[in-house]
Amino acid sequence: QVQLVESGGGLVQAGGSLRLSCAASGRTFIILHMGWFRQAPGKEREFVAVISWSDGSTNYADSVKGRFTSSRDNAKNTVYLQMNSLKTEDTAVYYCAARGYGDQGYSSWGQGTQVTVSS
Image (cartoon, rainbow, N blue to C red; front, side, top):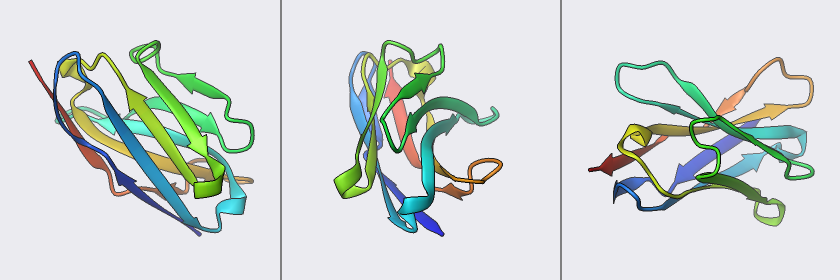
């Protein structure tokens, strides 16, 4: 249906910034919105942000609000997660996911990219 490839993770010091990318291919016309999630070691996966594929409206988890910004480039079928003022507690594997029209949830997931924030 939709394939997602993430990039942009890495190691950064606390207070630093990273930008994640998520490139979509396949049946991108069915995408309703794109979500960002993360999973830290020993913890459950948690919601980070969501962006509407059509109008770019966004919503964020309270833990990242004011620090993270999601955007999209529809011409490139790519969404981004700009992460500023990173904290050690942001360390996790980050995933993007796509929800299509009619889906009950997120039906396509990226492979994940590691973000490590050092103190």
